Amino acid sequence: MLARREYSRAELARRLARFSPNDAELQDLLAALSERGQLSDERYAEARSHVLSRKYGAARIVNELKSKGIEGELLERMAAGAKESELERARAAWRRKFHSSPASREEKARQIRFLQSRGFSFETIRAVLDVEDSQ
Image 1 (tube, one colour):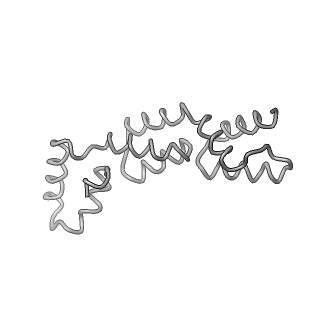
Image 2 (cartoon, rainbow, N blue to C red):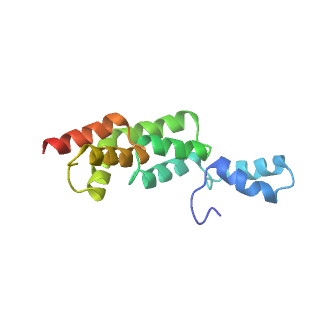
Image 3 (cartoon, rainbow, N blue to C red):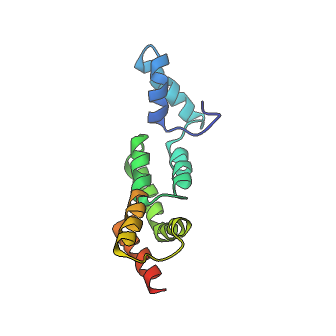
């Protein structure tokens, strides 16, 4: 499984739980994989946030990482990194989808909903649409 892609420790534990007769054996296996450097939550979080950052905002990235068992200081670091470039990513997603400023209130609402569904913050959405409206 680890040869195909990175997994978080919690995600791999959930997937392997059905094959393990007891939890202690599974935890020993996960600890051994971590010691050998074959399993790393940090490496998983960096790779997954990099992939998600192409299309999504910080809120969506954080929720995805939380659902895979990433917590604490590592999650905070990934969230801070995602927030740094959120405006540029939101502009790129907006341009790929819409190409021009909204002509009506309904169109603007549709564009706002699109960006919200991608996990961008309202401040970022407002900045994207205000800049595009002024051009």
